[in-house]
Amino acid sequence: MSQLLNIHPDNPNPRYIKMVLECLEDGGVIIYPTDTVYGMGCDPRFPKALDRLAQIKGIRREKADFSLICHDLKQLSDYARPIGNDVFRMMKRLLPGPYTFILEANNNVPKIFQSKKKTVGIRVPDNNIITTIVREYGHALANTSIHDSDDTMTEYITDPELIYERYEKQVDLVIDGGYGDNEGSTIIDCSGDDLVLVRQGKGSVEGVLMLRD
Image (tube, rainbow, N blue to C red):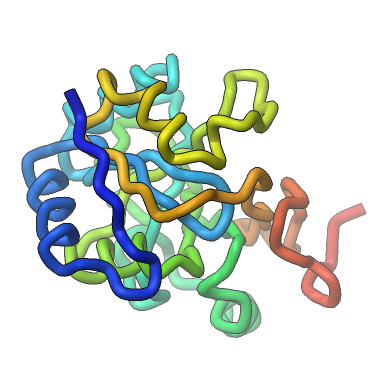
């Protein structure tokens, strides 16, 4: 059975953070708050953890569309090919924030996910708990949002205690960081010549995009 950890969003207890890090180092799957909906993730360097994450979502790992949570833009080079100055400046201006940026993946990504993925979604949430975890851990986390299979947001997403009740037998640890949001991140595809809005979510795109016709 998993553990429910109550972590203060402004002053995360270092002892609790250490417990989370140890869980990840053991190949655990955890649930955590972000600046949008609650997320579920693991260390992508552990194939069995990725398999568990995909199994919980009801999909095969090679078909999974996991994003990666980084604590800052310095981690981009570990997973994405070099990006243009315009895209970098936009990301630097908007992050941390409720956005997922799809970038051209480097050779590490297909190896990690055992797929032919040519792109990778990158998140840097504006949430002190998860960014502290990723910064202290030193590695990005494979991430997926908690929602129903039909993508309909429901109450259990926002209430960490209800999330725990639903997933306590499937994951190793659930972090209670307060109520989550019920709106996903805005997804912007930066892998082509133009910026393309894939999904309008919590993050504003006013003055940001030049979309393809």
